[in-house]
Image (cartoon, rainbow, N blue to C red; front, side, top):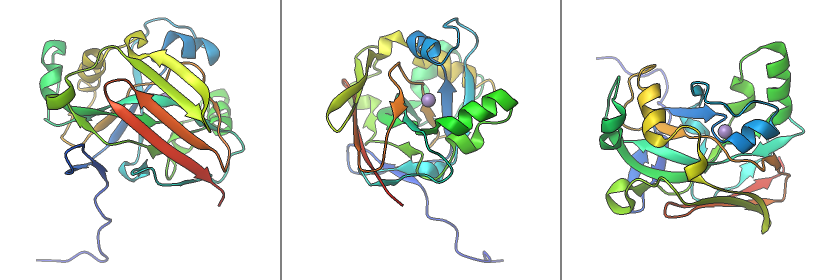
Length: 230
Ligand code: MN
């Protein structure tokens, strides 16, 4: 029997609507999953296979807690997204079986250092530091699929200080929830606790210290985060 050289980090967790906690294992994110957002980023809205990047589990921010404006950026962007919460392990999952692996859904914001991401794209470098920084994944409570089902359509929107910034419908996702989960499960074995951010619609833009983001997904839930100065 040996002990840790220092205490392990606390388990990252997201509140579930019923009051229990969903322990977070990994955070996967889909890039470019709405045609109108692909266009605004200078890309093509075709059905190229979905691609993924990751954030550390402890990047989540829950309970509407404040988000410190990150270091090393002058262009922090909001990306409002539907989040899938995996409840049952699986690899090489068939699309028809995907919903059996989904515990529930939440509203989340994929915060992005857009200036660093633009530099990384130009230099053909990884996105880690533009996407996976501390406090980069505010998320609302998880609604179990046993209560809300599996949403395939419904409004998705984000406001800043009450002003509309993003407004779309999750039915406009290029890749659906079953397609995303099936594809990702061919790249990694999915495990309970994995979260998947499914991409953002158009209207992304800068958010500044002192501003409050409020996001909603019809039939799923809400997410709130205030950016504060460091
Ligand atoms: Mn995103």
